[in-house]
Length: 290
Image 1 (tube, rainbow, N blue to C red):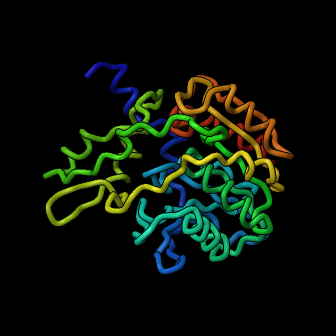
Image 2 (cartoon, helix red, strand yellow; image 1 turned 180 degrees about the horizontal axis):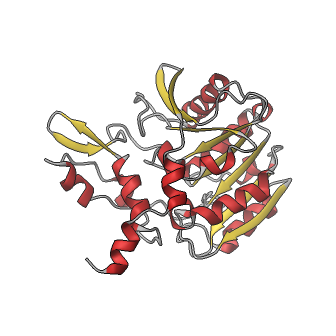
């Protein structure tokens, strides 16, 4: 192993401090599914609420090195959507069910019109919830989320839909961990942390935590009309090298959504902004939220 690679795998003090910050693991029922979420400072009831929502087939721990930097001003929680992370599975995955996941966590956390931040798939679900339940959210921040604004736009690449496998050892599963899309500038210690919390033990070995037994939620319809009717204040953030959200797409979102701020590009970042540039994302969220 080279010195450069060893340094890449050694977590810096700020990262270790963040992921070791005390947080409580909780479950709440959302229309029959046990939804898991993390709460960092539940006792600080004088602070407003902040909800963090992950991307497709990800989990709440994608926010573990982001959330502690926001607790000075907010009570912070991060959820696992149904069928992902440590949450229970559903018979069917719909926008309405994902909204129920978010609303159940907001209610269980005791939040009144919290700010909600969503990455990628999570950003789409956040705005779907804002459109259906605007009275429940104070403001929304969307991080590198693509929205189908025109009929005939390309569908998500087929590799996202491949079924998961069972591996004989944790090491074998860890060796197969991949980000989708694969482009990233994340440090090795970040990838190691995310991978560790993406794998679970099953009878025959080790596999990924997400549910792949049900059809994937279709997200390919034109949502421009829904976004144009939004009343919730929204901010758009994206990675400046993202393969998912171009500057043009981000700018089109800002122009389409009423009361929308941005777009704000995170330098030197691909799609997985919190992995590539976690401290830059913290700075952007603080500037938008504080």
